[in-house]
Image (cartoon, rainbow, N blue to C red; front, side, top):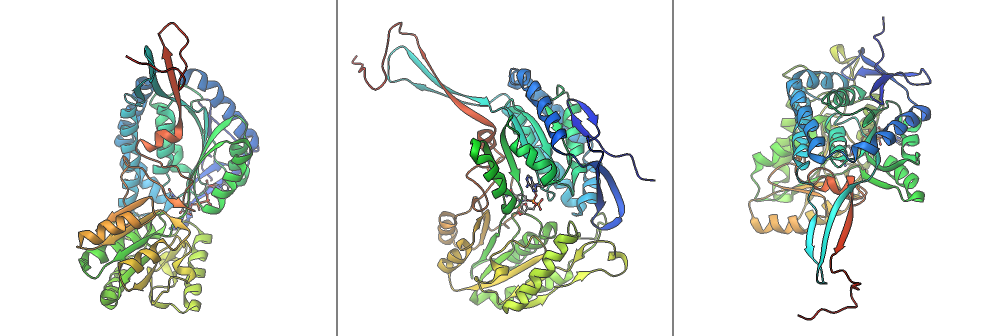
Length: 498
Ligand code: NAD
């Protein structure tokens, strides 16, 4: 018998979608396991959720920020208490290995503590006025109802990056999680709500992008859309927001680069390439899918990387010996296989992997071997396009300048890394790589929540998530002038002489 469907959360209540249609959430390591059934929401559900958020906004924006923050502190503790159980459910629905799912939940915990702390800061400025007896300051004000749309690869961390700063700033929220991983977002919304949120402040509608995502983006009462996902869908979101100048915060694709200079610590660089390229089965927006290696080290580096990639154990992420879980779904597995073929056709050399794994215990999952291509040229599609799977392209280069040129030569600009012992090279790359995130002697993945997160070019539209940068997304500045001179004073016109 099918389990009871999970419901939407609207105005403090768990409710069925109006159409009665549902979506299945299945384990990508073994699709015979049904994780849950979720509502396939449509425009009418979105309208109900936005109406609840609009109503709740009236009092939530006036709730003192430190009081709002206390709820987030409670939520952080509740998440901490349930970390293991939440991580296990995440591995079952998303596939990443348990160690990484724990990290995903931990990111949400860290963000909850961090944003709770912001409740007693949310700093503005006080600054001298150019006129006497006049006071000048700036304060943050909430934006209103926020529509949040999230992907499946960080199913709790990314919702937390959006929900928590939105709430502490005094906004109310409607979130639509990815259709492949609604359970982790469901758990998160339930916990944050049970920590004491008033009804209507946080609402969840499950469903697909076209059915539920678009109505959320276009709803006139939604003042801000924060989206993380593919560049193609992000562009669509931006186009829908543009006619009414709706704020859109877009975090999109990546084609990140790890650069290995000839003076690098080779073992360390290989460690970084393995972790960055195959961690989360390559399904991170910051994955190290390109590795550029200076020619002197190239052959040795490729040999070491191939040896390590071949040794990686692929399988169900709940098995503690497994290092690489499945891909999220059949489409994603097909996409990886297509790119492997594209790489071969383009003349790159397939050094290891290259096949789906579908025998025996793998038969009902979306598994793929860790794959390395060498002799990759920067013009090849496998060196330019986001694959989002366990495929690493190793590109030879002459020197630092050419590494930087190749590194910057793609449409994306999320994360880059350099391995070198030369401080001059490190600082040159730090200055010249046009990416939102940069690492020295560490891989392209592993952002910490108190620094800005996001990218340039086709990765983002100028905003950053996490850290205090997230507050700039979820609040608007108001500059306030208080004139206590008792007379008309004209800025830029009246001069003051002591
Ligand atoms: P996706 O773009 O297919 O979907 C993302 C979300 O958008 C989902 O919730 C989906 O339902 C929704 N959506 C789809 N069509 C929509 C529409 N027309 N209107 C409104 N919403 C719609 O992305 P995905 O496959 O879930 O995630 C993988 C992508 O996310 C990769 O490109 C990856 O690089 C990117 N990503 C980026 C970051 C970052 O911070 N830069 C982080 C994680 C993932």
